[in-house]
Length: 332
Image (cartoon, rainbow, N blue to C red; front, side):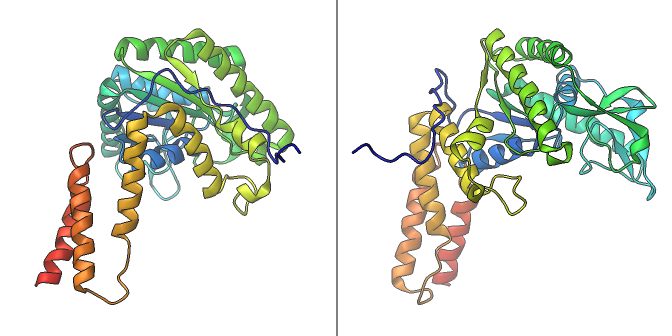
């Protein structure tokens, strides 16, 4: 009897290059890039996680990356003040704001400088495309990243053209290659469906992004594609892998996708280190049944010893200090 298969597996070919805990990673794009970055941070990798906030369309992603590596300031035409007197910028997430325009401009410039400096030393840039739909700011005729709840008559919604995106991304990929020769780029398409576009038009959008990803990874040797979208849509084709909104992948799905990512792009030694860290982290969060007994003191010393063994590879100073504090309280 043949074994029963309940899913069609997405085969992810292991990469010829891999990252380790010395590799610096930048993530940028839709909310899924932040999920992936958070998982790497949990694994003790040095990550600058989605520093511009959520950006869905590829043109704005390319624009802000270009600003960062060229040391240029955000477009002045896209600053605006809302009804509450808060300054915002249409290329940046609403988590970036200011009471004073001058101070807000300095905040955005500082963030761009931070990203540029990190990218200069980074080993991997993960870009997640969210949607091929974008909004054009009528007053400036520019494609923007965020409408900030400004009335819809101020914008035109449009499906970005494939060639339009490819030309923009070819330019930024060439610039990134010159900016940092060691930088590799990993492109993903977000598995989060944009149902506001309707499910039918969401498929048009995702198909556009998938074709662009394929063409870029075919043209550039330092660019690869990770099939997060395909894993979610095919291998995890079941609503038990979704949040209650039936749109966002739940933690089980995120963990499954990250596991495939890890075994494709992370060195085996680093994977072993991640497993050790997960075990230690569970030990740190363990609550003793009978308070601070001698057995628990020995348990804390064991954790301290294992953290000390990891300290040469990753920064566990905060956790080591916390365990040391607990031991000190026990002795006190």
